[in-house]
Length: 126
Image (cartoon, rainbow, N blue to C red):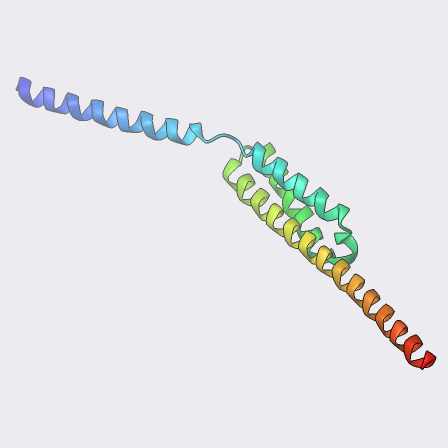
């Protein structure tokens, strides 16, 4: 009988160890403060690149995702906050890229107009 109690005792110890390791693994995930900081930075950078003008839908979605991430973190829903913060960063980066693309295309159009004007002047002088 002692052998069976020793066996049960080992099983209980193993189960307890597994439970402790599982709980500590869940608790060891740090809150997504870095992800939120990166999302804030990305949203600010997109705003500085005139995303409100050139990519309004993307920047609005990024800001909304950032607000939701901050609310989720405040409520202790760290996994959801992390996902939303990463989404906000991606959307803000997209808005930034689209803003830069629009500004570059605008600059290109201005340079092409200059070239056309210069060509017309050269032809008029001939």
